[in-house]
Length: 398
Ligand SMILES: Nc1ncnc2c1ncn2[C@@H]1O[C@H](COP(=O)(O)OP(=O)(O)OP(=O)(O)O)[C@@H](O)[C@H]1O
Ligand SMILES: [Mg+2]
Image 1 (spheres, protein in one colour):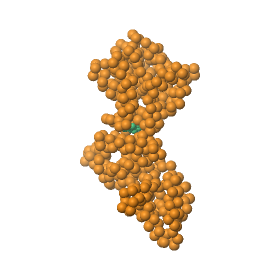
Image 2: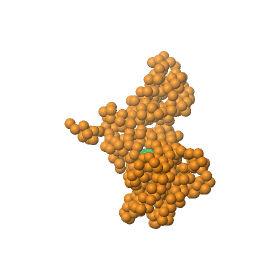
Image 3: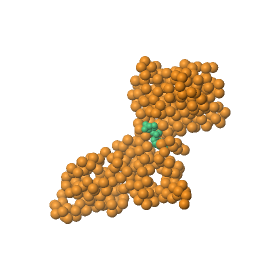
Image 4: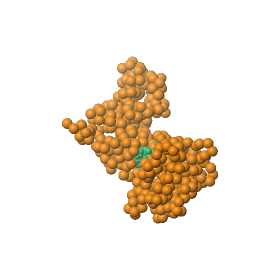
């Protein structure tokens, strides 16, 4: 048997797993980043109309996993393609300053990308930029350079690298054309605040914000990855699973609004389901994956009151039985009463039980949701999302 073929065809969960696992992957579309892309299109319109007449510098600001890197790459690709069609030589270059922390490796990387072969030693970054501009000019090339995670760019004494880069077209002006455009990316809004006034006001004019994603936005992004990008089999992921990941990561739900985290949870839950020999992801897969990054402390669980532990055990048993994300409080209380009996304990009254549930909710161990669908009107449902049932149960010795 061909092992590659086996890997390619025998997954019951994944179709193109790398579209979830690869950090480099740029998807076909970027849901909920239309505003940012439209703004980029607007800013770069003059560059498209008359390449070289102006060049642009743009700043992206946003928290972790809000799509800054992927939007820059996505836009760079589009720009390249559009200009190539018009017969203009244009290149997009993405540089991560976490890796290349000073102007020397940055200049080398740009040189390499435009096909300039230079010896490793003997040139300063200033010389290299000079050679870069000469090549751009001789071969009539325009470039867009993204400096990602620019916070890592070193600030040498008496020299401001960003200042140097911002003025680079003037510094090496050849035949009146501005050939280098920039996107600067940072998570930290105050990074640009600290710059000198003259650059700051210029850069802030072209600032694009990347707000954290809401739960519904995250669900759209995941759905797109599964269905349009064919990362996973459609049947492997239910709406309930997507909603759960949306609730765990969505910004308005107290999560980070981080699409990377959401994609990672989906991917790892898929791996777990596959390992268990299933063709679909279960709620428990997501709980288990999330447990490893969950803020819930095991110590806190061990120190719970006896009755709080009993309520949790009752909830775990009900959830295991139903295999759904939520169970009704009525069922939990019934199970709790039986559990108390078997331990010869007097069950607490309803109001007290509610108090315990609220405390457990505050600790983030369980969640409640009021649903009005029931025949008897409003009922409250309980879920445990942030820790796997197995892991929780292990720490609930009475
Ligand atoms: N709108 C979107 N549509 C599709 N995928 C997205 C979207 N936003 C983010 N992603 C995906 O989420 C992951 C994180 O995005 P990205 O790397 O661009 O975040 P970032 O803002 O650069 O985060 P960091 O500050 O940590 O570098 C990537 O896998 C990316 O493909
Ligand atoms: Mg990034």
